[in-house]
Each structure stands twice: as C-alpha cells, then as structure tokens.
Length: 322
Image 1 (cartoon, helix red, strand yellow):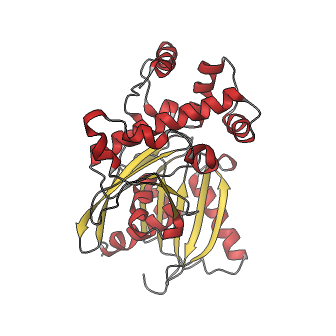
Image 2 (cartoon, rainbow, N blue to C red):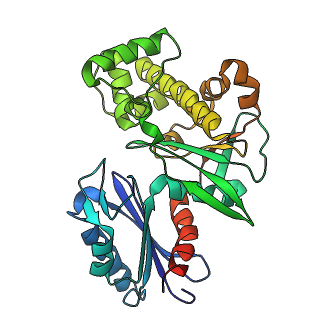
Image 3 (cartoon, one colour):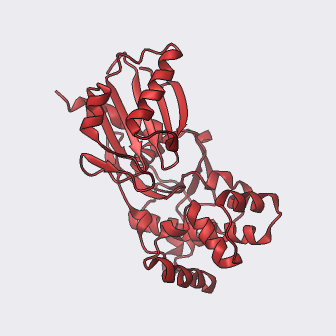
C-alpha cells in the first residue's frame, strides 16, 4: 500500500463522505455527497472518483478502499437500515476494480479514531480522570443512534467493537419520560433508545411534550435562538436522556478511558448541550454514581473522525491478503 492513494468513505443515512488518503496519511481530497442523489453506493463512488480525477488526482490506479457505513456489517450482503442502498461487498469490490475493499460499521470506525484524537479534536464535558490503555466508549445521535467502543489490545493496538447498542430498550428516569414512553408504546410497541436519540427522536419528544409536529432542524433552531420554550424543553429532555444512555454504555463497557459523544446532532447544539443536564444524568446511577463521576466525557469536534478511524483499519485488512 506504500506510495498509493487510498479511497476512504464514511456512509451515513443522509450523507456520504469521501476522501483520498495520501501515503503520508493526509487527506488529498474530501467531498460530501447526498445519499439521496444516487441510486446505489457504486454510483456515488464513481461520481466522487470521477470528480477527483477531474481535479487532477490519480484515481485510475486506485487499489485499496475502506468504507465505514451506518449499518451492521456481518456478511457479504449489506442492506442499510436508514437508507435504501443494498450491495454485495465482493461485487462492489469487483465493480470498482479494487484489490482490497474493507467495509465496517461506521461507529466501529469512529471508535477506532478515538485513541488518536488530537486535543483540539474533542471538548471535555464535566469532570473525571482519563485513564490510559483502558476501554473507551462511544455514543452518537444522528439519523439513528450509534454505539461502539474500543478496547486496548497491547502494543498500541486497539480493537473496535461493532455494536447495535442504539436499539436497546429505552428506560425512563422520571415521570415526564414515563409519559413519553407510554405515548410511544402505543404507536411503536418496542421503544428503543434510538427512537428518542435521533433526528426523528427529537420530533417524537416534541410531539409528546408540546403536542406539535415539527421537523428536527426547526426544533433545534428555535431552541438555539430562544424563540420557542417548548423547543428548548425538547432539547433539554433529549440531552438528559442522552446522558442516561451514555452512562449505561460506560457501565457496560467499563469505559474508564473516557466516554465520547459523536453523531450529527449534538455538535450543533452548542451551549444548549454543554449547559444541559447531560453530565448530571450520566453520573446518576445510584450506588455506581461515584464510578461514573470518575469517567470523563468528551464531545468529538474533529470534522471527519470516522475517515481517520477507517484509515487505521485498512492496512491490517490489506496485510491479510495474498
């Protein structure tokens, strides 16, 4: 792989982020394409590579690629949960003329980036003491709710965990959240954490609390500019629930290396998040509250961390090939 450009991608339910990585680890080209504009992932990849070639980049000799995707990746067939794309990994590799095509869960890739984040790529939320060479947890609300983590494997190696923890059952922590749960039970039956901690979740919380249907972007916008008290209440409730679920993940993983928040929603909330009850609810675990109080929480601020994570995973995959 030395001396070659490598194709990296981070595919979410809404956007596909592509980059070409140079041999020195720098990104030679980054583009964000709307998934809805393309019938298939193959078409989106070809469009990106064609545009990169027009910008003078040597894409014709590309042999290695790695894709992080918002979906479980367990077998050759991948069918996205939050988008209509469905594909065979091996068929896509052949269609693109690649030697190596690594496809992994997007939050596993994001988790792999965590041990390597620079100081300016994260923002501390609350207290705690970061311990080295310990498990690190990750949670991120966006189109859906991603959950993952990394565990140390010795010799500066880390193992990322592919998880569908966003689909665990939602557990209310107060009477208002019981009311939300009861309203959603009648509509959905099982109510997962993702049902509330996502763009759709903001809309559902607002519908129950305010009795109105509003799009997620309008809710967060009105909360941020202070024009709607009900929208602010919705965002506050969202952040509180996120704190409880993040605390659950930290307990499950024993994430004494830190708990990180990613995804597309929280970074947009700014001071509404940093001033919310997220950290208080993160620590509110009864007899285990002192344990959670020692775990630091961070908001990921680096722009394309999943690309860095999937880049770290690609060489090991390529090295296993003949």
